[in-house]
Amino acid sequence: MSIQTLARQFVDLCNQGKNFDVMRTMYSPDIVSVEASGHETAGQQPVIQKSERWAAANTIHSGKVRGPFFNGPNQFAVIFNFEVTPKDTGKRIALEEVGVYTVKGDKITREQFYYEGTW
Amino acid sequence: MSIQTLARQFVDLCNQGKNFDVMRTMYSPDIVSVEASGHETAGQQPVIQKSERWAAANTIHSGKVRGPFFNGPNQFAVIFNFEVTPKDTGKRIALEEVGVYTVKGDKITREQFYYEGTW
Image 1 (cartoon, rainbow over the protein chains, first blue to last red):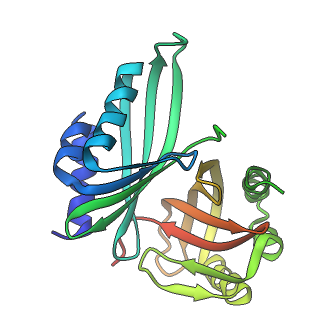
Image 2 (cartoon, each protein chain N blue to C red):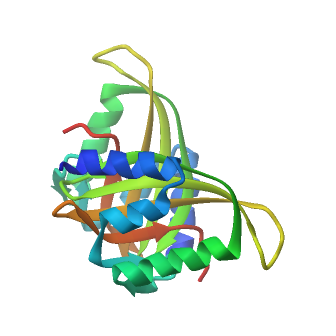
């Protein structure tokens, strides 16, 4: 599968709300996920669990993904826009972030999330 | 200077139309610039000349930058939205792209532009 095909499937599935299907089917067993802080989570199951914790901590009103955008033979980027209410504050907020994905052998091996400074 | 300060100056200057001031003052002499195709341009002057060629080939109606967004201690991303008319087609188009910047020692040492597949 070309990176273009994989990246377009990624965007289509996320825009159908199937983010966890993406993680289960497109993520490498040894994926590394890097948050804005630089904190890294390694391994498909730990990365899925991190997203499950985020989804449980927020009421997600909407989520949209734009892209894919490409750089070189094995990276693509997307732009996420979420409307969420963190359960600990109860205040609805808009989040915009950039995700950069590295692909090897039809699997995503690295994801880096860029968002406004939390550190 | 912190990467946050540098990145916010970057965004402010670009939104004032001072993109070339950014390149002259914030780019490392040995910066590497990577286009969507993967093509790399090395060196501050060649990178500036590449942007000069792009600016000469397009009528730029507007350019806005959102961000900065951060990942780890030495990278930030921005989202560019341009309205341009390429002089070779005469047709006005909207361009959206993601720029990812790597910073070392108060200078930008690498820029990667992510945009829709041109390859």
